Image (cartoon, rainbow, N blue to C red; front, side, top):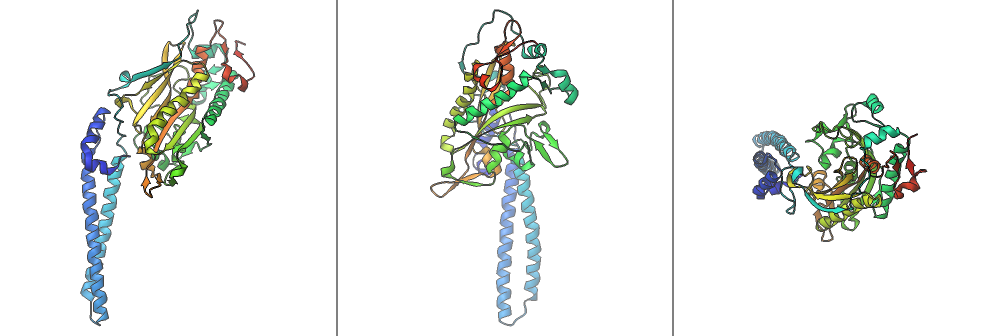
Length: 422
């Protein structure tokens, strides 16, 4: 959430930033409600001051043995006015703050201008895609022929965009999770096993609510949401808390299944396991001091990239333009892996610096050495989306006979080196 002071003091900056995002936030309405709220707050304070003065006069009259009935009646009347004014002040603040929750973060000054993903900027490429002496197949075709991906039974059990992984595919998925967590551990991330369901306050803290409710799975009876990413519980671990400066930076990692309705993505990646309603992911989260956050972002991108490099998968780093930024992000790099069977790069990780946007929403602060309180910056990144990594391995390591060679880095996690037709 953006600081209301920014709206008061520099609304033009916010308007400009939102235009770069192709957004039209209710800035005018927020400022009007804020003005009414401050006026109501002053009115309440004035009424309290007036009532306090009357109370002093009543006390003095009683001390002198005189009657004070009229003043007592006036005090009672002002008390009712205070209660009404307090309720009005509360309602105005709630309306203002609710509108603030719909305003996205301000892009960092280094973010390139652009309307959508077509205007994102390729920063660098790592690894050169190998050339096949045969026409490589897409992972869904390979998976069905090898009998390790079952799309029909997945749809039978749960509907479209659910898949059953069988035998070697299930083992490789588990191997990838362990491999990614082990690698994160060597980079200094503390492993967490969080809940897979969270409450509304937690979803609001990282920016999923209220704006993106339609993309979430809600268990109505308990009013709990299935998490769309481990970023949600990991970042919210310290919601409402005040950390000490010496505790920062905090690096966290977690494996979780993730659940997304994928609202608005109809027609995108409908084949295979690239865009599923349920998928596995290993997430990296950082909570850091503001002055270090952009250095930490570059390090986060490298940490996610190491997973692909150790698996021998070519990829590229893409800087998102302002119009393609996620709601909570100030700056984002996507890692896109080479999908050999489709001859294209596909997003496999998104690494973002949210600056103080999420910390402010969840009121997570830290106590500085100078005895002040500041909001830390939060960062998050996938390392990696497990299903997409599996798909990339299947396509890149496929052989002419339809078999798939297991990457060297994963062989200690499984008891096979190749997946062949049974």
